[in-house]
Image (cartoon, rainbow, N blue to C red; front, side, top):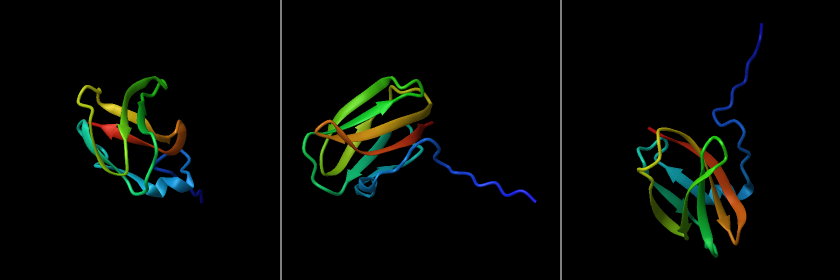
Length: 96
């Protein structure tokens, strides 16, 4: 008998602050919401492709932030939310 454990989100470690940030819907078609439940100073959303290239950035703040990235090709992207240039949350999402 062999037991295999699989993680749906490989390569991304969650930080304790990740509970304060949620991205939905995931997957999306180039429009999604980024909800931040705590106050942040100089917040920024950074989106990178699979090669690690920055493909999108936007200033963000506490509350619901509408993100429109219709120019992104279908695929998997990695996001990070920063406060004063320090990463407070990260994850990945899909564009269909």
